[in-house]
Image 1: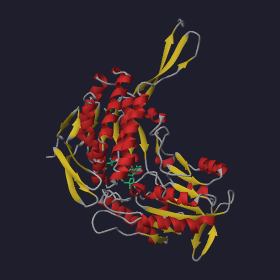
Image 2: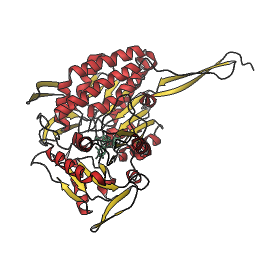
Image 3: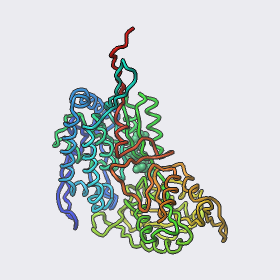
Image 4: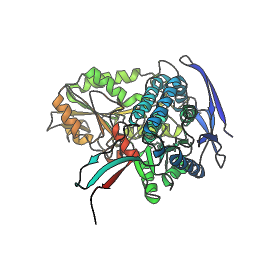
Length: 517
Ligand code: NDP
């Protein structure tokens, strides 16, 4: 039976020990699951087991949901001031900051992301998210609305109740906090299900939640499989809302489960196939660096990854050469080495999935310019991979790969006649405008545009169907700006003030000051 795990990290960049319970965290206690289920976690860099953690099921989700409902009524919700909620979130942020090295080490061990990236990005974002929403906890406001002279009307933004958070494995802690922080700030309680592959940082967080002093039941964390525990969150009649990040396929299942059960509210942050469009007048060296960051960051396991790169013909050769050289220099290997840029893919399933996409690119006629092979002999490492001569309907251009695979395409001419170069035999001929091609996808999560012409930047950014448009950079979230998808990339927004809408109900209050019947 899983109960605690201890890690003694003795790496060149982090030496230290972490010990924490690996059971379910329900009603402020670490408890065994009803059916005593466990799962063995794997270090994706070595394929060796690293921990056995408890695995919750339907019944555990229901127990957690009941605890969250009771906490909502008794200790949280409208019972606690925004200031009190804010203080607790600030306390948790301080504890996360004080444990940055420990949590970054757990993320590196469990996810395969590099320790230094986790420390420099995931953890600072996590602390800042907690503080950002702590700041909102006492600033939730409705409006006073003038209607008729004998009536006063105003709105209140009230918590929804019990929020179910289902989060993926690519940014286990920061995606969890992206839901947890605004949900708690608005007065909701939480039942969170981390990915079955990566529950360690969430379990460690439970020890900090206890230390911060949150009342029991306000936060409940139940690791479990998606099709059992995850499905139970979607189907629960006690849970009032589900906030989800993950694949479009699973997003659809959650929507169905919500419709079948209590019509719970849902917000979905789903997949993407984001275009990077690089014009002749761009700063090529900067564009290369940002495009590399866009697709290869976090092993390519990034919903906003700039996986389709459209380059204008005047700089195409220069860009391609520099992009290839830079990708060749990315060091792949031990997530705990200070020089490593790219770690392993999360799991054997994901490794095979990415390798299958690489094979499909070759089979469909794209030119493999770089990589395409497993890296090393142990762990789920894949070489940074570049395809050129890609055509619009290839799977590698249409589908989310979620790995270190870039598809590069050339376009020519100016707006109004942006011509695509599609190889047909040995010749090229123009077909469609680049914006039309960039929008030729079921996804609509993000895009990047590289140009020194501000008019063009604005025009392109506003014509791409995506929830985020970066101009002259990529993959740089800002906590104050919302993220989310157009089309099948999701609904609702994370981050910024917009995220608060996911976690509140608006109530209209009408006060009669003179109407007689
Ligand atoms: P999933 O969408 O399956 O997983 C995301 C979360 O949903 C996990 O916690 C998972 O649990 C859970 N889940 C799975 N099935 C259900 C269900 N029926 N009801 C409720 N929750 C469920 O992503 P995968 O791990 O399968 O990855 C597949 C692909 O999804 C990736 O290759 C990528 O394309 C995309 N993806 C996108 C992400 C994003 O950030 N937008 C993040 C992760 C994946 P468990 O892990 O335990 O199965």
